[in-house]
Length: 80
Image (cartoon, rainbow, N blue to C red; front, side, top):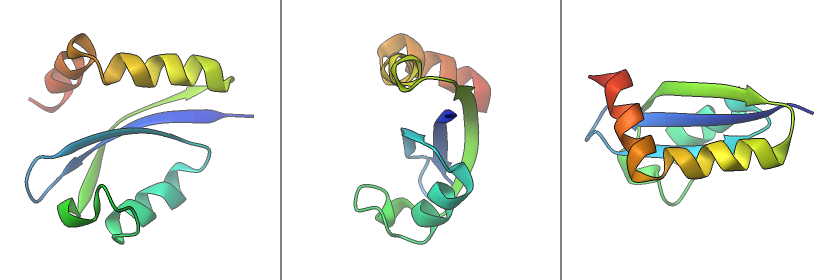
């Protein structure tokens, strides 16, 4: 089973979100459609990062990293 860690950036205000999903295409549609409470007011979004993992545990470790200070700096380098 593939698990995807992703990060999206709001085209409206620059808000960045990091998450995990099994279906990235559907998840992005839900974010951009305002179906997620934490991101609805920031839509529309652009995908800035994705990485596929074979295990949920490995994906969760990467998600935690991307939400850390060092991980946020890494994402900053991708969008600057």
